[in-house]
Amino acid sequence: SDSHFPVPVSPDEVDLSQHYPRYFPADNGGGEEAPPPPRIRFADVGCGFGGLLVGLSPLFPDTLMIGMELRDKVTEYVKERILALRASNPGQYDNISVVRTNSMKYIPNYFRKAQLTKMFFLFPDPHFKEKNHRRRVISMQLLDEYAYVMEVGGIIYTITDVEELGEWMRSCLEKHPLFEAVPDEEIKADPVVKLLFTATEESQKVARNGGQTFHAIFRRISLQEE
Ligand code: SAM
Image 1 (cartoon, rainbow, N blue to C red):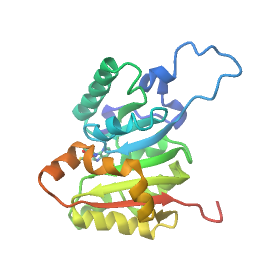
Image 2: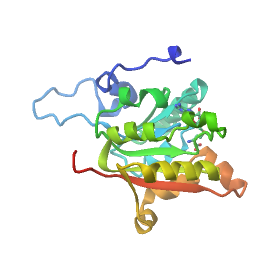
Image 3: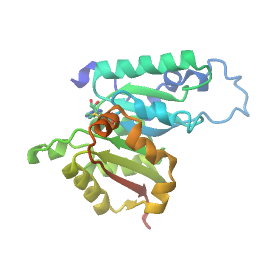
Image 4: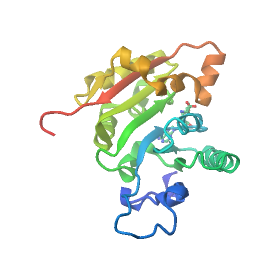
C-alpha cells in the first residue's frame, strides 16, 4: 500500500540531486550568476520497465524526465537499468530517473503549476468493468490535475491496444476544455511519436503479436480566464 513509499509533501521537497546528480553537483560554486536549477519537464506515468525514458533520453539530452511507477520491483529494475546505462555510457542517461508512487494520488506532490511540457500514458491498465472506470489513469478529474501541472502548449501522449480504452481516453480529452487535438501533420512530424509504438516493453509486445493500437495526442491550451 501507499504507506510503503515516501511521498514528498510538495514539489519543493523532491530531491532532484538524488535523481539527477550530474545536474545538481554538491558544489555548484554558489555564485550569484548560477543559472536556475533545471526542473523535471517530462513525466512518463506508469512507466513500467522504462523503455520510453531510455528512448527519449538521447533525443532531449538537456531535459529532465521522470518515470512514475506503482510496482516496487519494477521501479527498482528501472533504477538499476538507468544506473547501468550511465555506467556504460558516460555523460549519457543522466537526465532520466524513476520514482515509485501512485500517480493517481500524488501528481500535485511532484509537479508545480505549468511545470511539465510532456506527459505520457502508454498502454495503461484498461480496467474494463464499468465500476472500475474511476481507476483509469485518464478521467475528467485527473485531466484537471494534468492540465494544472502542464505548461500551455505542452503535449499529452496516450496509446493503448485496447480499443475501448483508446476511445475512452480520446473522448475524455475531447470533452476537456483545456485540451485540443494535435493536428495530424504535427503528429507525423513529431519525433517522439514513433517511440510510442516502439520504445516501451508493452508496445513491443503488442507489435510482436501484430496488435492494433489506438493513440490520442492532445495539446494543453489556455482559456481566456487564465
Ligand atoms: N508504459 C509501460 C509500457 O508501455 O510498457 C507500462 C505499461 S503497463 C501495462 C502499466 C503500468 O502502469 C504498470 O507497470 C503498472 O504498475 C503501472 N501503474 C498502474 N497504476 C499506476 C498508478 N496508479 N501509478 C503509477 N503506476 C501505475
